[in-house]
Length: 242
Image 1 (cartoon, rainbow, N blue to C red):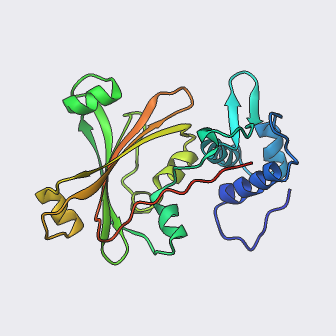
Image 2 (image 1 turned 180 degrees about the vertical axis):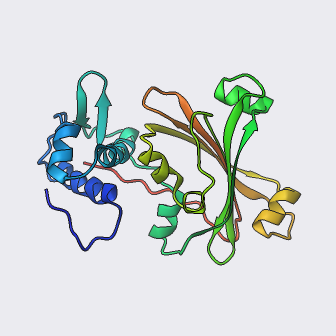
């Protein structure tokens, strides 16, 4: 299968969109098995990691479903909430809004789990977790994200990785998500958030909690993100796939 050589996006994104077209056009029928990873590697002329990244995104977007011991099939389009795409990365969200996005500040470290985090991850208190803290925005800070990952997931302390898309990096390490749970609320601002988001007023900020699970329904990531409400409006786009 040929890809547009003038499209400068990462290969997995181009392959994802090409595979999506095969599904939406009906070339790949609902409920049918798609070609194996080996066959797709041969067809597209890319690595298996790239193919897995593309498939993972289509699973998250409810176009495909992985069935253990069977293969990956095209998801049937039934009129329920499973057919709606709700989750996307901040990078893609800003891109769709036409807002240039950059990481203003980022740091990664190994930290001991607090009582709260130990309960969330089901681990013992003081177990080590990977902690990624980032301030992101455009001309001014828009959000501060505080991410915790299983200790087996290592994030290199390299600028290119810390300032880029976390999910894209994890996909290169064959770490994929199959389900996200999100909770949004308004909370009072703290002195730390005032400094990070450059806010002077004592006004509430938007807080979003995200729980990310792998294909075995194991929690892999927990993130608390705080938004400057003057710089950001939370949007949800519902796409029904017929």
